[in-house]
Image 1 (tube, rainbow, N blue to C red):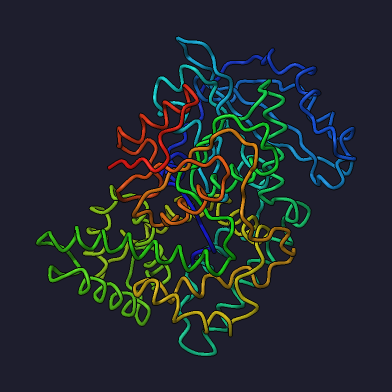
Image 2 (cartoon, rainbow, N blue to C red):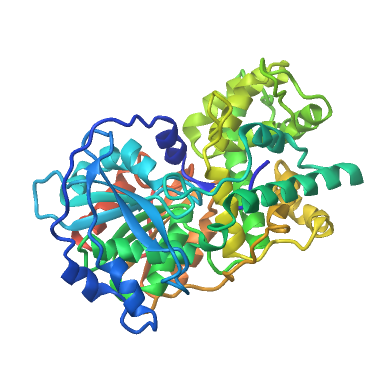
Length: 516
C-alpha cells in the first residue's frame, strides 16, 4: 500500500540498504563560533531569546563508525511556538572538504521522502559519490529531519503489523473491502499516535526548515548552501520562504509544487507514474522476451492491468509467508519506475510472477518499503505519512470521496490510477490536524535558486519543476530530457556541469537550459 506522496530518490533506498557504519574521526568545528551563531539567531521573533541558546550551541563531533565521517547531535525546540517547552535531538553527520581550493562552507544534502535518512544518504552516497570538485570545496553535511531515522523517529506499527498493512487490498471491489482498507489506515494512524504522540504534531516541513537554519548558524555559515532531491525540494523552498536573506546556493532537483492541494498532487504523481510506465513499456515491447508482449505500448498497459487483476483474485506464491497480491505487486512495479536501471530487473520479476512465482516483485516492494530480511522496517513509511499529513489537509473526507476520485485518477493513469486514488485516503483519519496549506512560494529577496526537472520523472512530474521555478522570484529552471527520478548525478554530463558550476561559482545556467 503506497502512502500519499511518497517522493523518493532511488539513491535514498540504495544508501539506506548499503550503509556500512565504520570509522570516523573526532573533533569540532571552530568556525561555528558562539558569536556567529548568536548573531544569526532571529531577532524579530518574540521568542528570539529562547531560541538564542539553540543558535549559540556548539556541536561536539565524534567518531560515528564510518570512515571519513564525523557525527554530532544538534538540539532544537520540540515546538517552535513554545521554545522553552522541551527539545529534540537531531542526528548530524559531515565529511570535511578534501581540497584543493578555497573552502566554500557547508553543503547540506537531503534525499527526499519525506522520511529518507539524510545521514544515510550522505554516508552511503553523497559524501563519497558527489562530483570530486564539489566535495573538494564543501564540507558535506546532513541532518536527519525530526521524526526520521536517527532523529527521534516516528514509529507506528510492528514488523508483522506492517506486513499485514502492506498487503491490504487497495482497489476495493465492494463495501467490505472498502471498510477493510479504511480500517487499515485508521489502525496505522492510531499506531502512530500511540507510539509517537509527543513528536507527531511537530514533524512539519516548516519545523524541519527551521532546524536547518539552526544548523546553518552552528556550522558557522552566513548563508545556506543545499542540494535537495524530490521532497527535499519542498524543504529547500520552504527554507527559502522563511529565510530568503540566508539563501546561498540552493539546488532543488525533482521539484514539488507547493501550490497544489493534496488531491491534485496525488493525481499529478499518478500521471507521472503512467508516463514512466509508458517509457518502460516502450522499451520492453522492443525486446522479444517482454513479459507484457511485443505488440504495442497500449497492449502492454492492458497486459499489466490484467496481471494486477489476476493477482488480486489469486495471489501467487513467493516462497515466503507473504504471497504476492495486487498491492505488493503494484508497489513492486512502481519501485522500478524510479530508475530506468531497474527495468531489466522488473522485466525478469514480471516474467516470473506471470509464470506463478512472485519473489522478484516482492523483493522490489520490500526495497520500496525498506523492509529488512528479518521482517523489520525502517521508519520511512511512518515518517512519510506523519510529515505529509501535517503539511497539507487530507485529500478526502472519507471513502466516498476516494471512490468519486477514481475516474479522474484512472484518466491520469489507466495502469495505476485506481490504487493510487484509494491510497490518498491515508490522511483522512490522522490524529493531528494539518498545520500547512497549499500556497505559492516566491521567496522574494533570495539569491538565485536552481530548480531541476526531468521530463519523464515518475514521482515529481516535470510540470511541478516548471511551476516551482516560475513561483520563485529568483528561480532558474534546468531541464533534463530523460527518464528516472531526479537528474543530478545520474549520468548527464550536461546536468552535472551546470549544477557543479552553480555550486562552485554561484552562477546558475541560463533559465530554460535543456540537457539530454
